[in-house]
Amino acid sequence: MLSETEIAEMKGRIDEVLSNEILTDWQRRFLSDIRNKISCYGIRTRLSDKQLSMLKRLTQTPTERSDLGVIADNPRPEPHPPSPRGPSRVQRPHRNPFRVSNPFRPRYLLRPPRAFRSVPTLGRGLTLASLAMVMIVGFIGSFLAPDATTGDTALKNSIVAPQPKASATRGRSSFSITDGDTIRLDDGTRVRLVGFNTPEKFEPQCPREAALGNRATERLRELVATATSTDVKLVACACAPGTEGTKKCNHGRSCGTLKVNGRDVGQTLISEGLAVPFVCGANGCPPTPRPWCR
Image (tube, rainbow, N blue to C red; front, side, top):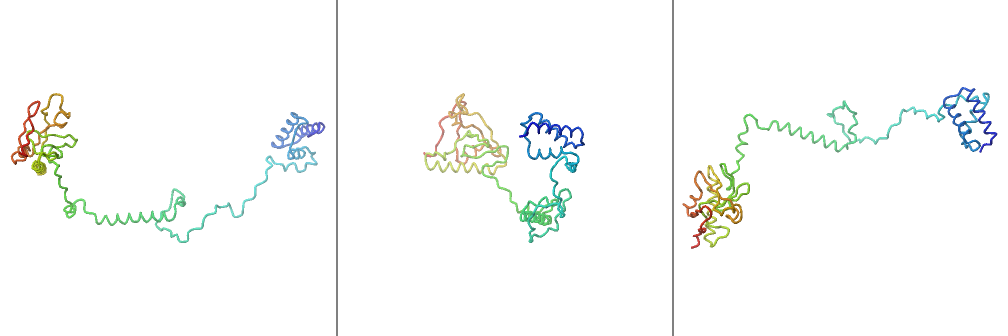
């Protein structure tokens, strides 16, 4: 801690140097800060060894301060001179002695040539091999491809057109066959064909009815598959008012007719002994005829 005499002498010497000496900006700023600190704290002023050394050096007489001009604004040590070898470089791994340079690799004009150094050598090799394979296949294919203007007759003849399924139709209607008198439209609607009744194949009353039911179903598929035109037309069911579309009316099925080549399929099945006439009234039907088990 400084005494009052030392504080007074220090203040006087600082004032004398600030008023009479030619100082740099850093020297003048340093002395002003010390002067303000001494004025504020007095004998309680605490200065570091570095501050005391610099203060003593700046407040010496001109003869004693022969080296005053060497004090710079920023008393930092000068950096080490650069190495004669130039700037240091990052240590890089040795180049793979087994790596073969690609003579077809293009030079990079808009980006540095080391842009893809992060890609492994094996990955680059596989990529180049894949590109070369694609180019070779495309080159060979251009000679083997058939002429687009004339076409390849042999190739066209080798392609067989898909055969229509038994449930497919040729005409305005599209549906599948459930049994001899029931079909299902593509939207899922079940349609009971009206005007005739075929033997049951799902719940037959005797083996003969089951056999006839299967024959009626297959005959209907045959008629549809060989037809040049089919036409399905929905009609109102013979049910009590307000019940159509529910389980109480025709087991929830819709009603309709099916014509193959302009003829109702019911007439064909009846003429071949695979169905019997079944005509309903406006709001109901008579008992379903099932004469095949008698």
